[in-house]
Image 1: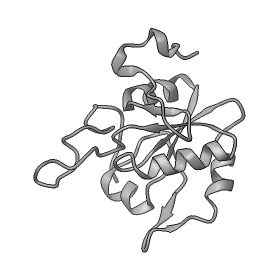
Image 2 (image 1 turned 120 degrees about the horizontal axis):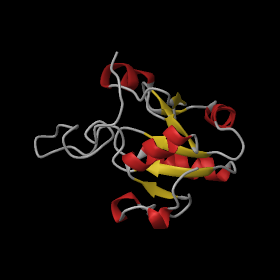
Image 3 (image 1 turned 180 degrees about the horizontal axis):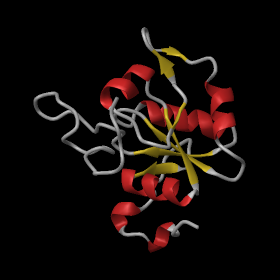
Length: 146
């Protein structure tokens, strides 16, 4: 059973969002996934997961496909198949942008959907590099590469 949001520190609270259940920090997503309350769905491309890294135990359901970033025509069916009834879905992308769109679509499909703030890599720094300003990896949460 997950801890109710009111009992969590402020940094671990669900932030309200328009069109889906809310935005959550990476640590909360990890907590929900580890407790079995949620399924973590990684919406990044296959190349991103292979080259940059992935979360062990996450389900891959690509939102947009490389090259050209065309919508994945199988997204709806694959997402519904990945998330059992009664489970939340927490959605992860590179920086927390595609996962917002995916969370909105998941909500339209009847799922309780949350966006993971900062994504896997976080925002770019002043040099344009990712991985130093937030994100799943920067938070020290489990991930693998290759």
